[in-house]
Length: 396
Length: 115
Picture 1 (tube, rainbow over the protein chains, first blue to last red):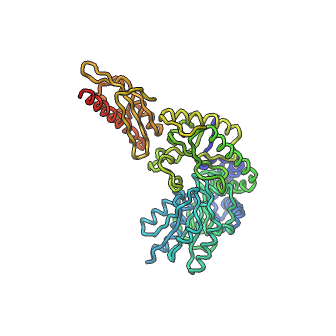
Picture 2: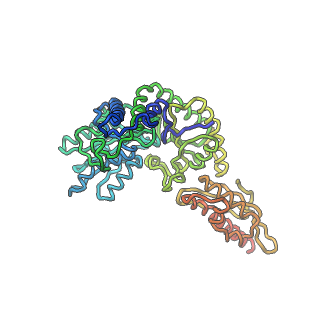
Picture 3: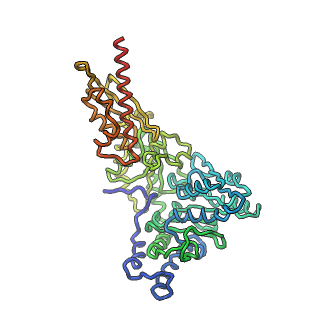
């Protein structure tokens, strides 16, 4: 029995999503949406339908949705596209983000910093939340963009986007220069209200493969009228925002995946219950353990834990040998040998980041899988603690 | 894996890159003026590469004289293991450093005994 507990990394393609993609993959419908003829128009209809479904979900106009090859590309397009006009001016642009953004936001910000932009990296509380007041305090005359993720990908903490959206809007009006607000909603859209009007964002980025859609497709909402310089130039597709022939089957799949979210809201309670069962079960069976973050205002599918006397990657590999997939924030696992920025941002020391794992569940996770995990997991931890010679400090 | 009661030498090594820690216990027997490693055990807090290099190092070192043992390089351990990904090569240094520390500890104890 293989048990997948890494849904925050990626998810399997839903059968309905696959069915929606099939006609555009098997040769049945293969036209180029830019072609005027009937083949092209059939493909264009598929793209338009998907765009409409997605716009419906985000509460925006279809023309405000732009498809890209991934959420990483969407984040890059937004960040560089907003800031580029300012880099030509003598006014040094100021940007605000958080200490624990996903790399597809964090690295573009680092790149802009090296190009001369001024960046504020906001701290988060030990529970994992950005404080709206800190955003307000960080705003400057030359602030052009604020990027704050809707929900953190490693711990699941939900950020007060609507509250921040409001204060950015009023600050913008006061200083009579527009401050753009961007949120990376990749982890959030499966579970949270993503109405862009309620959130008060100018940009919102999303991905296909975290929501039971295919890999290699993403996109963003761009508020109508907002100026954005493209990242990719060519044939002028996506209203000049992203050149390249549209990925019709994947766009059709993404539209179906997003429509599925609205229809599977009742699954959220089930996922939340499984998360609580997992936390309770692990705490009961394994001593010297720490839940990173809290329960309230967290996504219902992500659990992040730290264990003393064990290293995260070793836990992950030992579980993998037993057929169980989780991920880790340990430096040993990272290509750059640096621990998870999210856990460091929470104030965790190296001992706790070193022994951390992320368990993330999804709509296909079953009670039986949770039972099996709770049986195997304590044995794996006990074995690794024996190898490290760890002495348990708390008596249960 | 594990520890040795009344070891002749104990070596501790920490990997500053990713925070792995290894403790190596050695039992040494002197035979015809040669110090031979009779037994080794380790306790390692680290990733799978750190644990497996610890284990392989102990296998290689058992029965060696301390002079022979000190000549063993990290790359010998990696070779015996059948290779490691580039990002994990540094893990194999842990065992070498722990061994050097354990032998140093043994020699120091021996010197103190002979005083």
